[in-house]
Amino acid sequence: MKEQPMIRVKSFLRDVPKGTMILDLHPGQPSETNLFTGEFQAQTDGSGKLEVYQVFPGIQLSLNTFLADEVSFFHESHPHILEITHCRTGRIGWNFKNGTSVYLGAGDLALQNTGCCAASVMTFPLGYCESVTISVNFTELSRNPLPVFAENGLDTDLLYRHFCLSGKSMSLPSSPDIDCIFRPVYQLPEQLRLPYFQLKVQELLLYLSCLSPEDSALTAFQSRQTALMQQIHHQLTEHLDRRYTIEELSRQYLINTSSLKEIFKGVYGMPIATYMKEYRIHKAMELLTQTNDSIAEIASAVGYETQGKFAKSFKEFTGLTPSTYRKKYREHPVSLHRQTDETL
Image 1 (cartoon, rainbow, N blue to C red):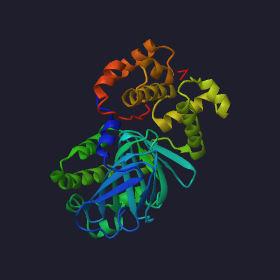
Image 2 (image 1 turned 120 degrees about the vertical axis):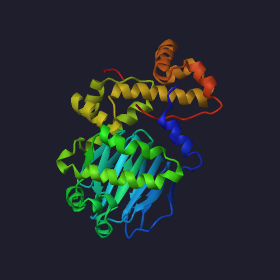
Image 3 (image 1 turned 120 degrees about the horizontal axis):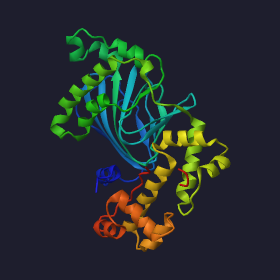
Image 4 (image 1 turned 30 degrees about the vertical axis):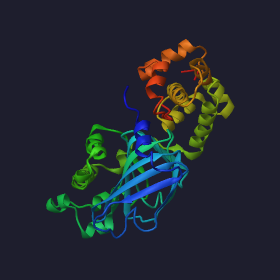
């Protein structure tokens, strides 16, 4: 069975208590001002770990792992510091001061200066996330140019004007170029991390220097619309034994069906029906490993009319029958929460 990202996240954070956010600052040349220096705070009801490296003077990179629905961040607001976030797995959402919301899926990239998110809530619609955050202090960078820029007569001021000066957030969808830059970053042994990060940060900034703010492509939604999707999500997942239609939800929440489909997919990364099918199976995985309920009882609890239909869907998704899955994973139970037309 293919490894589920949620299992990897839970395993990595197994020793981090709920309500705890660990900030692991690795030794390196101190920076005058960056995202993870000065007054930085993070709070959550879940758990998380940020492994922070000083890559160059003025540039820090953080490997982030979260097992939470949301994290509240507070850090100093500096319009000359650019924050770049890459999402590896899960989904990441921000609600900005201007009333808009942006969500990243696997492989997507977001850029904004720290004035946009100095006191913000980062949400994780699937309950987990692995990501990288790179903070670039352009004031410090002007005094200590990056080797590849200095050696080739390139100016980082262009990056500052395009992505930092406007004070707006921009986002880029997943692409082969972005994947090529970030994919190796997540799996490096400790002794190779810093030199590899130095190469990859320069590669990323060179890549961004070829872009302009007009290249932003991810859709931004109104925060009130995404809040409505969260209400719908709560209703769907709290009543798994009930199957709602798109039309029912549309009438109940006074939103047309096409907008409902589009915004839900924008927040949660997939169509409602697909999401709910995966959510039901993940909930069944949890019940199989953590309870003594019969397979028939579990099938009913997650919204299947018959045990046979449940078993068929479960095997299509996991490659195992429910009874085989229970025997295989019973000793190491895992609570899965990844929620991956028109009865739902």
